[in-house]
Length: 73
Image 1 (cartoon, rainbow, N blue to C red):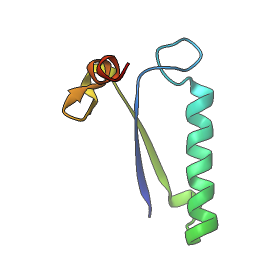
Image 2: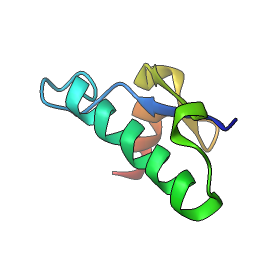
Image 3: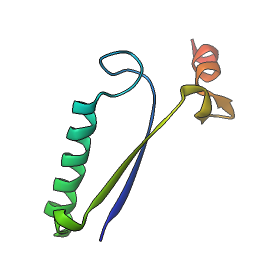
């Protein structure tokens, strides 16, 4: 019984605030299909969870992403 947890930042998407329902549907279907093709996992017992994280709650290189991006530009 696979359990996949996808964490993504809440940015982009059709409204600029994060992935929309269609994006999430495609992610869930794609990950489920990949596990079936590569590992032979049963889609009916595959769980995919998508968690959206606010951009300021995601860090890279010791900085929140907005500060990291400013430092690199």
